[in-house]
Image (cartoon, rainbow, N blue to C red; front, side):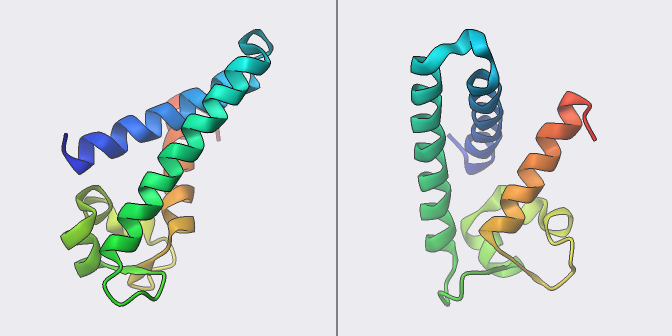
Length: 107
């Protein structure tokens, strides 16, 4: 599985986990399972981010993203909303949340 495919599926799963977790019909067991899956996905993304962060400064430059996180590299300009030339995990999370909201049609 490519990183791009993984990240797309991850974003979808995280969105699904939040949707199920917020739905009363999901019940407590579904919430626990979804929260566990969300934590697992977040841990994997953090692992990939850390591996790509060549200088260990907690930020990815465009080159670091290109070498370690192709999906992030492809969307670097959209993720780097402050146009600082570097992005953090928080920036990536904000981008993913905005993408989920856009797909759902929420502001």
